[in-house]
Image (tube, rainbow, N blue to C red):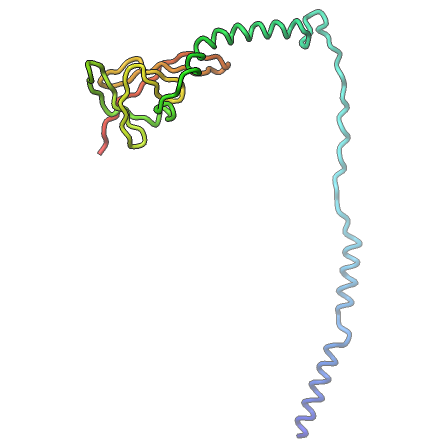
Length: 180
């Protein structure tokens, strides 16, 4: 019993000793000193560049925003639109055919036949087989079939070049050999 008393007293003494003053005050004081000594190093913001306006020195030439300059540009554009419009207008006015919803590179020529004394190409798109005659439209660039042979279909396409003008170009679909 006496041992139990000593253990209880020793336990209470240990608990009180743990709750007493510790080195925490030293740590807090060190943190405050370090915080006060440390200063952030921020680079100063550079001074803004000075804007120097330039005078318009081309007063002898035509002013770029004048009505005369605008009129010349509109005349030039209207002539160009008229020339391009003759090429594209009939294509925009007609009804689209089903084969025009597919890009040309997704089509494959798989054969050709003669039907009613006219050549007919067999074109495969999305695992479906289509019969294409002369004058049919293919692809998304207003491509019209102009020639069908045993090994290829020749199209006349209307596309925009780098400047935005409509031009004609020739495209072909080559016969695709079946791979095993």
